[in-house]
Image 1: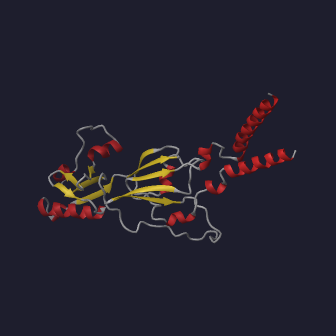
Image 2: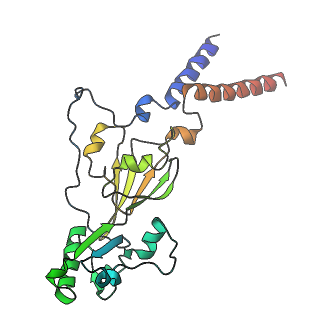
Image 3: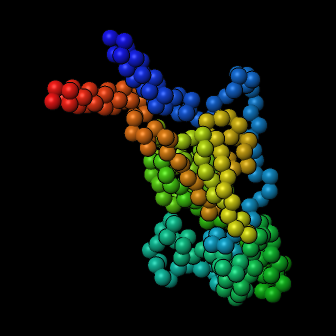
Length: 265
């Protein structure tokens, strides 16, 4: 009888230890010092994004005479029926391995490490210097062709994604990817970020409200986001108390049956 009690309490203890707690499931939890409706400081991108290799730019030039600027605004001949992301691929300007973009007439333009605003001003100066007069009222628009990132691991819809915004948070990236399931570790999300000299690995805890003040809360182009599984998934004990109890009870029942059969033999 005593042995059965110990076995029963052992099962309960293992179930409680193996199931996923509510604290591991909830995003952006407030601590005890946070008062209701208090202002939460949000980490803004302190410095504008600087272009990296493989970034894709959308560049458009406008002027009083549209015919003069058509040559700078390519329309894809490879696939004229392309729409959305496909058109950006055909008509966009990719930063090559040397850090340049190639524009009709202007040729190779170095942009590696430049901000979007710096590229726009550089293009306007080049056009006004060699091809247009001030009276042409040229208007240059330079944008990133969306924020491209990859997300893998314990996520509903892994793969490469694009958010057509100037800024996007990691919460938006996860929301656009099907959310993190119960078996995903929200406390230690890995962000591998590209820099001019290589890549760095960063970590962010999405269960804490402090994540909103992290420099990695905002997604940057070419980020790789990895959601690791919780230990409960690899152990196979279940993610809820009922699942864990059922699994462990099945194991104990099988062991007990085996032992009884062995004793009888």
